[in-house]
Image 1 (cartoon, rainbow, N blue to C red):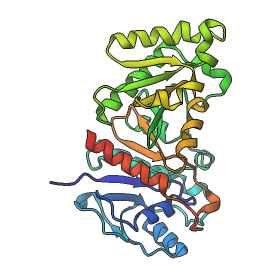
Image 2 (tube, rainbow, N blue to C red; image 1 turned 30 degrees about the vertical axis):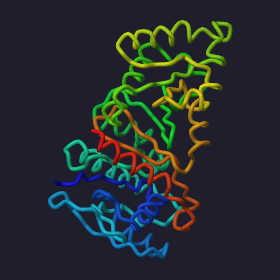
Image 3 (cartoon, one colour; image 1 turned 90 degrees about the vertical axis):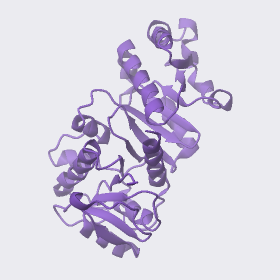
Length: 328
């Protein structure tokens, strides 16, 4: 039986993504893992770190069918535009970063890869290069022609999906429409079934307002939007509990038997998740026709090439992608 292959993109070349790839390569993986990166970059960073990892060049016409031995890393060589200095951003390499993502995404679409795992990119330097870019999620949605995607972060024992993501707080309430809430909830439910192998997911839903609106005294979004939408979805068989006050939802009593929490906005759900699992959490993009997981941290330019990093989040991202592919 041919083992599924996975793509790994190191993200911003001046950041810690290349370092993370090299740390992971010191140990064997259960599946063939293909780093889509510059061989020169990885060799130079390995020398800087004093890490004994050997790049094994691979190409689409001869993919490996077995995992790389410990101390080696399969690399689909993707040339840099400019040499890289760890910690120093260079707009010339923005196109390189997007080429690695395109190769990985298209490889997932055509069946070369069972999923893709991404190290962090630096959105600012890509935009400074004159390329409109708002993030991995939006880029992959465009690449796969996906209209609606959902951000979910997960750590051991907790998954949190978001109805809204990177919005000013003053705009959140208006963005929580019945249509948006229904789309996001259906995507979350469907991917828990089809990508995580959970036959009947149990989803806890946060209210928007303190005390979930307290019967309308602290806001009417629960009464006018959230509760009616959840009722319609329950009629279609979705197991949804809520809306619940967010300050008491994130307690063992409620979380013990749930498969995911649906938070209304970014800083409602993610502080709890990151407190529980920072450094060992994974960002999963739901709604895509492909599997994509990512780390829960940024490029850490100040740590690139220092050897003072932890690969825990990337390891969890790998494990999650493997589990999702197995569940499919």
